[in-house]
Length: 167
Image (tube, rainbow, N blue to C red; front, side, top):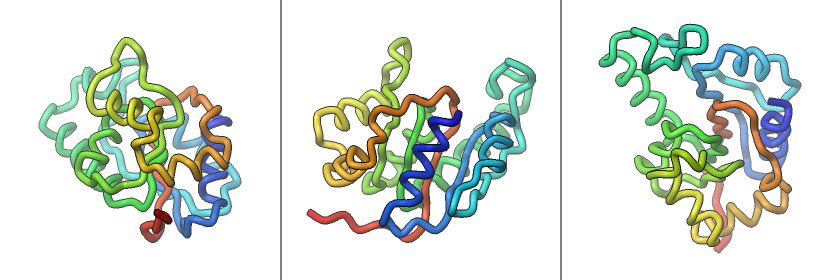
């Protein structure tokens, strides 16, 4: 979790015009850790009413499926409206890029090899080949984020005004 916060702090401290950090997760431990981390930008936690029960993921926890789906869609749309998406291995945030193809995105670790499918598979392959947000990827590499491997499943979205990327 510390590495993930370090990555977010580096992006938030860059010259990208970031004003807020939006955290979208259903992991209570992650929320608590992020709230206590000394970021220079405020952390806003996207509301999550439906949370996992113990070690059972939210989608298997007995909550109403329609309500979970509705909450997931709203969260995904919220993430798609941010200025920059720094994402971990969760498919929810991958769909944010589908809703907003121009969303600058950086995957801080490869998708799980046992679940290497769309949309994260395409995002990762494009990032590795240099097709994904060429300038954003270059800027993130200059911040040395490509060596950070998070241990959580939270979505880190760094928001503010939409950054303009030089061509």
